[in-house]
Length: 451
Image (spheres, rainbow, N blue to C red):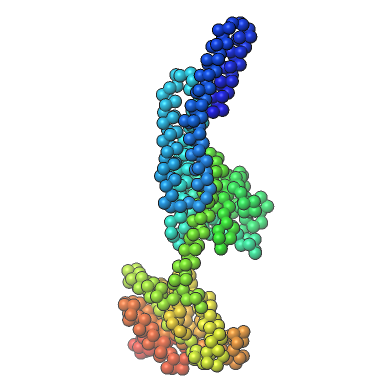
């Protein structure tokens, strides 16, 4: 509309000048006719081209500025309608290049709108993929991979700000990595774009910043801050050797990407929270029995397939009934929580610890032979028996002791029920022989063979 109006005003001025110079009455008539013609053209372009295109762009920005709905027909209807309309107009104008009335600025505007439409389509697909119902860790990896591809970035990282320590932890990173990947510099470097973006809450573009997170050749940086519900302030850092593609992306497009990342991470965190409630024991925070048995079956199959040992610990708190009867159930609950913490502190990340029921616990130790599992259990036992827990409501002379039974796959059994039964028998042998001890199934028989 603006381009056509400018052309009309320019021509009108030219004709008025001619009338002033030549002073012919017919020129006034010609000028009036041409002005009327251009007015009609301006109205046609306004009604058939500019208003539909601008309306679609506004609706695009409005939709992409909010939360993405997976079944929203917006991407199926309106964005495609915009692409079809713009593509048709460009084809018409391209075929009419020899026509003087075709304005180059109009074609340029439409080409820009077509590029925007393509980006809107891409970011819509991106949001749909990110917002799939996935666990948090998988969502982090997907956010990084999809964002890197969309931004044409050589390196991407997702960082989480610890509000109390004002330090950053690295949630994930992909791409060209440095030999020592560290986010420590983000907490102390004054010109850190990550801190600047989180502090301002705005997209931040920088050039020439150096950091231990990425190689010095990554001279162009883009930071997208996000606030994840019940997690905190986070930021997506994308770097590249050339920022040409990222510079073509408008803030509206990057804002849509920002909303998708925020929504995906928030939903994934909620998904994990619900999942934890289903598979964990509410008192101790350990896995529950059902989850343990499902994972135990999977781990036995993996153990046999890869010929790697798998050990099971069955653990029972000695005289637990006395804690409840003498000091109350609240103290008994604190004793259970204390034993759970001691086991978590002694175990590796791949190990699986569960409250099997009452005062009984079970532990899976993948890639761990029986002798090693024995020493793990013995370390937990010594830690508990050698500590006085007066803060739990127990008198100074009372401590917490456990009895532990250990069995190993494939040495002792190759079927889950048999492996659990043997570790349980080893546990009851420990209790029968005086409690506060660890018994490795078959150790006595093996000792007799060796002697």
